Structure formats: structure tokens, C-alpha cells
Length: 393
Image (tube, rainbow, N blue to C red; front, side):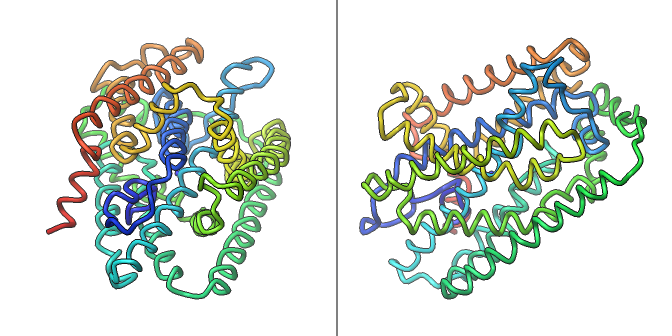
């Protein structure tokens, strides 16, 4: 959950010669975030009933009975989405700096990009995936864009107030879940939802998402405080030099890795083992801590040359085409899992987790190869190019 005025999806490419050089670490982080969010989303596509099944409460994997699936999902759930969100904040800060150098009015000059991103997200939600993140990012970016023109004191107050209210809300939801009587029937997915994704047409699925738009769009509403916090955290990290190839940047990345993973992993693990009642605290409070650790860890790995060249180049290519890769991975999973395509979700229902992990690996390999080949001939991803052409008019 970066670049151009849209945050993490199209960053410094529109800046002039006076702009600072592109930061390679950001491209690698974006690529990792895109492929990492798929580690969570692939289970949604692979579940009979898809998004609606998740809303109705599919059971979490048992760490003892299903260790491979449990570990796979634990490493990803909420963490890469938080990472992507932070990177959107970084990209917004970069765009603000670029606008200041060019003398472009802010935030007025940014609004068309945010509105275009919202339109893209709306199409993605309607046509492909009910849990789209672009719409929420676009609305959050409009607020943060205004805050970038305010003082650091104002931004700091908004940042810590928003996250405090968010933690209180997640805690209250958790208390309510703990106090509620157990209901085994809550995990039953409606036959209508299963049927529309397994046997319905593409237009049936579109109609289903539109009919259930309010519940499907609730996540960015109740997590809005977290979105604001993570955007502003990205701004602060960028301005602190956390992504620069300097001694200061390397020091910050080491601290992020140590503190983010050292505190976040045990906290997240305790909540995960605590049961489904702690889901909201795990995904929306503990997971962002781990995301900061992931960010630092990737940075340390690049600083010390731990990544082989092919991995660095592959992640960077996906990161440079992040918007296109995000949409394409969901389109591929839709065609693989739903009845309008291969129907794998119905065919392999109840057969275990390995085919889902294999699907994730296959889609990731395709995205890396496709983005690498595309960038040999073009400087931007296909959707990024569409955005640039439309906004240039």
C-alpha cells in the first residue's frame, strides 16, 4: 500500500533536470510492496465467494495444523499494504518538492492527479477487485497534499492524533469481538456469493460488487486514521533521508529494521496466536510496525549487497511499473480463479494451500518478466503512460 503526484506509482519521472536523481531503493521497495500485497490478495481470489467470503469471516489458518499457509499469510497480512501506503506518502512528498522547484501551485496543481487516481481506482473496483486500495489512497492524498503546505507542527499534530484515534477504534472493535458470543455460523459463506464468482458472468460479478459497494468499501473508511498516519510517516522518512545512499540513510534503515522487526514481529505473532478476535489489532496496528521493519530490512540488504542482481532488477522493474503491475496481478488472479476464466477456486476448493502459493509465485514471475521486457522499450508502465498523457492535456 508511490510515485508521481499519485503517490507511489509514478514518482520522479516528470521532474525537470534540476530534480535530484531517482532513488533506486524506492523502486525496489515498491516492487516488494506490490508482490507482497499479492501474498494476501491471492487468498481472496482463491477463496470460494472471493471478497464476500472474506467479509463474512473465513477462518484463519491453524498455525499447528496448517503451518505453511499460516506462516505465508502471517508474513504478509497487512504488512505489505502498510508498506505500500508509506511509499505513497513518500511519493507525495517527492511531488511536493518537485512542484516547489517548478513553482507549480500546490495543492491545486496536484488535484487532477488525485482525481484521476480515484477514477482509476473506481474502475478497478467495479471491473476487477472489490478491495481496491487506489480510491482510498486518492482521497487520503488530497488531505495530505493540503497538509504538506502547512507547518511541521500541524502535520505532527494530525499524524499523532489520527493514529491515536485509530488505535482506540481498533481496540474498541477488539473488545466488542471478545465480548460477543461465539457464533459458528458466522463463517458460512452465502451460496449466492460462491455461485456468482464460480459460475456467474463478468457482468454478474460487476453487478454483485455494485450492489454490495458499501460493505466492500468499508476498509478505507474505518482505517482512514491509519492511512493518514502512514502517509505522513512516509513524508517524514523521506525528509529525514531514510532512502538516500548516505551514512545517515543507512543508519536510519538499520534502526528501522531493528525496531520494526524487533517489536512488530513478536507483537504481531502474539495477536495472531490469540485468535480471530485480535484480527483488527494485528492487521491494522501491529502489521504497520512490521512494515517499517521490512522497509529497513530491504534497505539494509541492498546496502550490504545481499540481494542478487536479478532480484534487485526484477523488483525495481515491478516498482517502476507499480500501478500497471498492481492492476495486472489482480486481473490475472481473477482470470485464474473465477469461473469466467480457469475457475481454479472452485476446482481446487479444499485441496490445501500449495496451489495458491504456486499461483502467487507464477503471477510474480510473470510480472517481473513482463515489466522487465516492457521497460526495455518504454520508460513508463502502460497505465502510468496513460495517466501522463491524460494529465498533460
